[in-house]
Image (cartoon, rainbow, N blue to C red; front, side, top):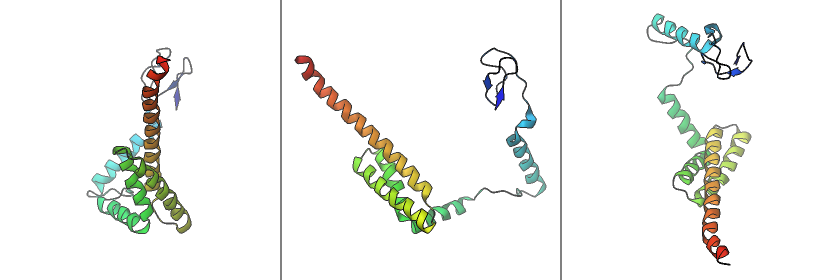
Length: 154
């Protein structure tokens, strides 16, 4: 995090001017390790015949293997994820409830047995909670629209 030397205002990483006082701010490139890391990775790539040394990224095949492992080891997590996405896109309240139930079971399985799938559960449960919130807001607005004319008539 950077601060303006003139007024002390908090600055974004790539601000050239302070948004508060307008003072010009110098960029200190040595503080941006991610920029250096990218250049270092490019150098490693060219020196090592197309292979980046210490590359921790996964290939598509490894990622798909991880997803397949989650599906086979923790089916609850996958069901939670699918129902959560469905509840958010289709808007079915039942899918949201099913997702929350399977998400709880999936997280318990992750904690008790040490299997993968916690992120699937968390994403599914977040989508379900958002879907339920939209449903409750929609219901409240619907009731308000129906009841408001009756109250105004009195």
